[in-house]
Length: 306
Image (tube, rainbow, N blue to C red):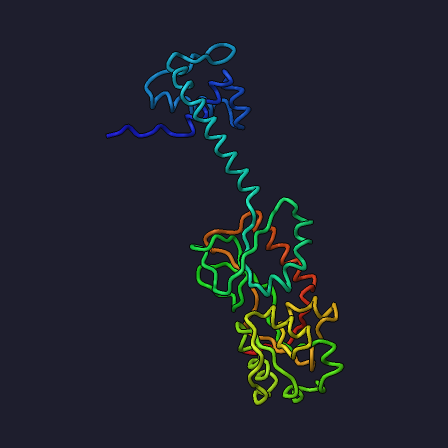
C-alpha cells in the first residue's frame, strides 16, 4: 500500500521557514505566531520520523534531511505558485460570456453597452444569441437573458424588464396612411408579425377586449426585422415597449392607441444556482439593475395580461 501523502500545510510552512532560515520571519510572512510555525514543523518531523531543522540562537539551520526535502519542495511550490498566478490572470482577462435574444441585444443592450464598458474597462463582454432556453451544463456562457416567469429549476434569476405590448408604426404611416385613431382602424393596415412572437398580436387584442381584430399579417423571421419593417412604413407591428424606447425617443416609431398590455412573462438575467456569479458577472448584474432602475427601459406600469 502506498504511503499517504504528508499534510500540505506543514509542507508549506516548512518551505517558508527553510527559505528564510528563521521561524520568526516565517511567522511574520505567514501571519501566524512563531509557536504555530514550530507546531507545523513538528508535525512534519513526526510524520517523516526525522529532524528537519537544527535550532540555533539566531535562527534555524536545515539538517541534511531538511536540505534534501527543501531541494525537492522549493521548486514544486514555485510551480504551484506560478500555476495559481496563471489561473488568476486568465480569470481576470477572460471575457464575460453573455447569451441574449437577438432583439434584446439589438434594441436594448447594445445601445447601452458603452456605459458598462466605460464603468468597467477591464471586463470584455462576449455576446451570443439563440432562442432556445440556456443550458449552463452545455452552453459556454456565464449569464443569460431569458423571457419567462423567473422560476427555472436550477437557475438563479433577477427580474429586469416587463414584457409590455403595444402597437407601433412609423410617423410617416401615421401621417399619410389610413387613420389609426383606435384599434378598430387596424383592418385598414397590414399587421407585421415576428415568427418567434406570433402570439403577441393575439395577446394584445385579447387584453384590450378586441380578439375579433386578429388576422393574418406579413411575417418576418425575427422581431428586429419586424420592427425595421414598421420603421420603413410597411405596416403596424406589435411592439415590446421595454425594447423600443430608443426608437420611440428617436421618432422612428410611434406607440398607438395608449392601450399597453403587460404580459405575465418578463425578461430576467439567469445564472446557475449552484455557481454564484463571479466578479465580472456580478458587476454586469449590478449595472443591469442600475440601467433598469434609472428608467431607461421606458416601460410604464400597466395591468398584467396572461
